[in-house]
Image (cartoon, rainbow, N blue to C red; front, side, top):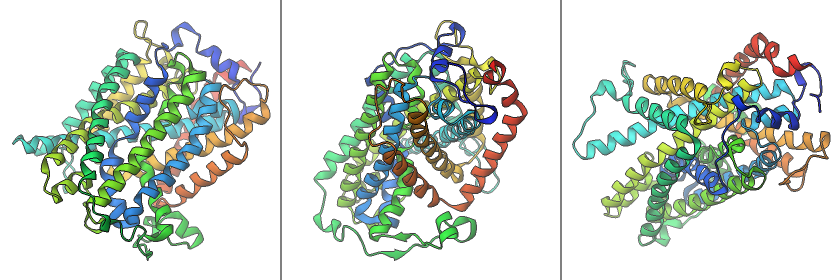
Length: 494
């Protein structure tokens, strides 16, 4: 079937996308199972969110009802996950939301979402690498080893310095990804096992220190949120005059827009569709299983930590570790810090994996130079974009303190959710005859609800985040018209 549509909104058929994966020089090696995909999902989702955000949200926004905020954010992700599962099983091609958009909404939309994912995954990798470096330096300090200040990251005052640990981590993970997906899956499995063991230690050990009085009131009385003004304020406040509240029922939904960061990355599983042995069966299983497992763990941990210590007394920087210190068990605090440091390695690696696959897919379609779409003759991995992006992100992580840009990862992910949900509706209408191994239920109602929920969380992000996101998108559109549109394989095919 030839490409349909003209100009900016020409679509690349599902059949053509699958044929492109069969070209010897541009084919990825199939080696992943449903278990591998689930491990990848758990590995990337359980990270900074569970170790840090629990205390911040409980103390400042939701109290013990933080567990409900995790449920609300999990539901938003579940709605999107059902849409991702249909696409990933129908179009088992690298690229995730980029590839799905190309098959349903057209080339310009596909480019925009691909450009968005490049930002999301690259920035997410760098942010997590910097966070990992902080945990490792903390553990080193505990045993009397101190990193020189100049190698611990940029100084707040002078801006001078280099984070050698973050830089080294990204380079090592780049090498692992070049050597093959199966090796990456094995490394991830070991690290995820350690991370899950730490999470279960927190849950089981913490149960013995819960005080029922700490759950009262479970939903604290609502209070006006002490937010910023101007660009620091949530966009929903500037547009509609609605002021998000701390605590109360609405505080739970405000908290959900914050803890959503804890779920970042489950969509990375979809980028590995082309490297899965039986994608029609295993992609839906991997996406949905990893999301359910992580949501249950998040709820359990938040209930335990708010039961151990009154929400008003929780630490913001290290709530789980400090909660155990507060009840006289510093040993568990050390175990938690170790688990956090180990766990963040898989988050970093899988985000980097997702970014290289999106870049590879865009290159194979000609929207980026085709030079980057050649796979390694032995390992079957997209080694050229992996090395390029790995080195760039390592340098960014080493030289830049980018914590203030972390919200860009949130808005980028939510934007991808919106596009994928719309794509499901469109492809159901334009290609109803396609075989769909997994079908999103209640179309178009469920995708529409997914779009509404994602947009609501986006509106709760600061206006400054929207401004930065808009600048990145404008830059992407310029590059598309300057290079991508002319060099697109769809353009040359026509």
